[in-house]
Structures are given as structure tokens and as C-alpha cells.
Image 1 (cartoon, rainbow, N blue to C red):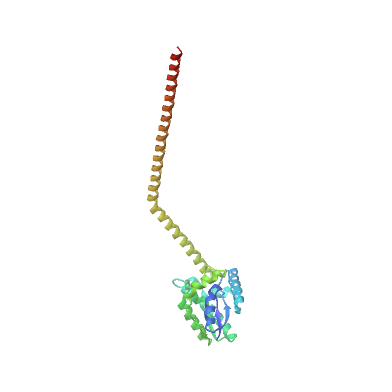
Image 2 (cartoon, helix red, strand yellow):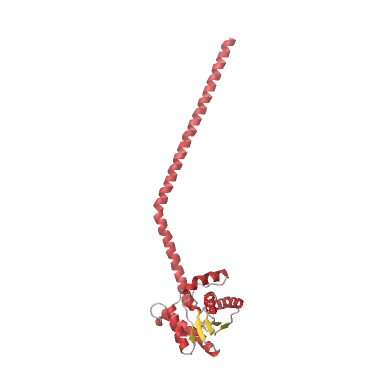
Length: 255
């Protein structure tokens, strides 16, 4: 089946491509991601994907990159409700619609997406939006929960030296990811401080014991040194006394 695989990046494409090719799909990768910000990040991800796809002999097509259309599609934070699921839903929809429109215009039969490989995405929402978008355009849906293959995708992408981003793509997700990293560092610092506080009495006791033993050793060594000096003084005194007695005896013999 001639299938357009919407891809968010190179690393997330590895396992979906392998699995879909094994199933007999004739794949083309579609890079439709106006959500990615800034443009340098968009380009970096695209170049990573293109380099890998060339080695795999898989065609890649690029959609229009227009962050302003993405911003209009997802709306403002006050329209997202609790959390950011609604923001992501709108983002998925816009990107999948772009991929689906390309698929229809170029006579593809089916549509799939690599978004379903990430454990950090809303997989069920992705499935719902993929089904809805494909249904309005007469495309078959090729959906699989690729999350079980995420560890292997991670291993392979690292082995290949691929660029691996640390946020989903959009500006808000970048800020959220940065905040999560800072929170993680803060908690880790607090945990280290807590462990240090718990260990402080034990370490203080151990330090005091080391100092006590050190003082004992110093006192013992001082005592031994004093004894040594006393012994040496006694030997000198005996020798001097012996020498004096010998001198006295010699003078008497001469007299």
C-alpha cells in the first residue's frame, strides 16, 4: 500500500519505518511540522531526518513551514483548558491535515504517523485525530502504538549519532521541558541535601573518632619518644660514670 508516513523527526522514524516496511508498505516520509520552534530547530531535525532517509533510500517530502498558521490553529493558553492536551490535539490535527492533504494530492492510499512512538505524547488523541483526518479524505489509516519500540529507537538513534531533541517541538513545550529539567535539578539538589543532613551526625562521629585515634597515636608516640630520650640519657650517664671511675682507678694506680 502506498503510504505517507508523517514524521516529527529522525529518531522517531526509525522503528515505524522498519515495522511498516516489513508489513509491505511503500513508504514516503512527510515532514509537516510548523509547530517546531525556532526555525533553526526545525531545520536541524529535518537535516537529521534527510541524512538518515538518504541512507535508507526512503523519499522525504517537506510541507509548508509556517509557525503563524500553527499559532492560529492551536490558539492561546486560555483556550486549552486544564493541562495542554487540547493544545496538543490541535497541533496533531493541523500537522496530520497537512500530511493528509498532500497524500490525497499525490495519490497515496494510506496515512500513518511516527507521533505514536513517543511515550511523551498523547497516543489515544493521536489515534483519534488520525482517524478523523483520514476519514474526511478517503484515506486508509495505518495506526500502531509504537511506544513499545521506543527503547529500541532510542538505542539505534544514539548508535547512529543522530540529533536527539529534548522537547516536543513548539515554543510552549520547550519552556515546559526546561521548567521540568529545572524542577528535576531542584529536587535532586534537595535530595542530596537531605541525604547529607541524614549522614552528617554519622560523619561527624566518624570524624571525631578519627581525631580521637589520631590524638591517641600522637600521645603514644610522644610517650615513646620521651622514653627513648630517657633511655639515651641514662646510657650517656652510665658511660660518663664508667669513664669517670676508670679515670679515677687509673690515677690511683699511677700514684
